[in-house]
Image (cartoon, rainbow, N blue to C red; front, side, top):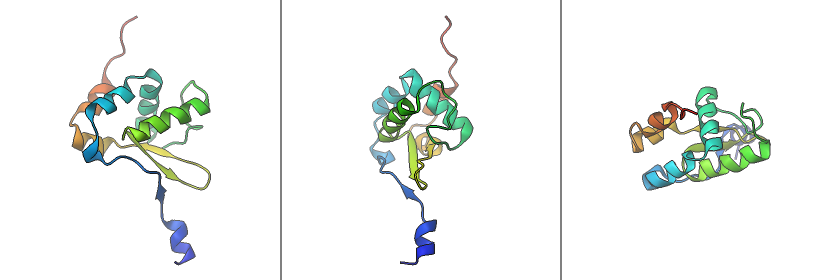
Length: 112
């Protein structure tokens, strides 16, 4: 294999096939406030590593939540050297569950 070609190919961490996603799993992942905040931040950022996201929790906690979000099919994560930038699978989720992600992310927070 050509070394230049191997270095240019992106490597993605395993993620579930969208056709196999269950809406309950997606909603359960989004029901946790920290994960919802991470997803909203990713929606704005486009792609980010755990340490670069603008959320008020420890990077190790963000990493844990990102793992759950990836396993539930909400984000995809690629390897970039030692970094693991993630992005929201918004278009794919909208194909699978039309309007669901937008409805959850755009919902007004509860009044306190």
